[in-house]
Length: 116
Image 1: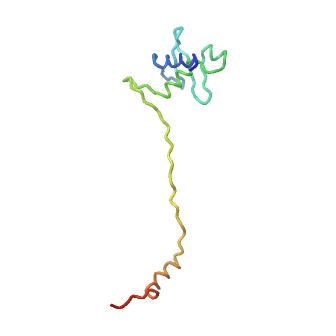
Image 2: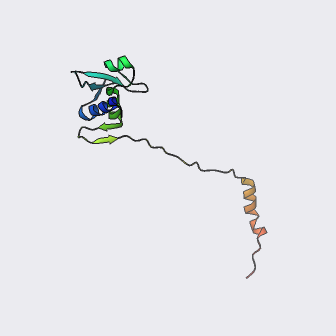
């Protein structure tokens, strides 16, 4: 695990990270205040580290950990898992109803029952 990931995990475990106006608010470890993180396909953060380097910072990693293991107010963790469901389609064959009806009608004529 790289250092930024480790610090992101520490932030996620120690601090409250909430959402406001579509952004995650992640507290700064070195200063007063919070940074805004927009998660999605390409996450962004308004911290100087992300703005200078353009790669994931510790605040983005913290949000990723929070999203993966959503903490509840009572201290328990809710783990979100993805489940793949496969369904089996029942095969149906066409029926030749006129031939079926004729076979049912003429069945007694073709079957010989021995006399008792």
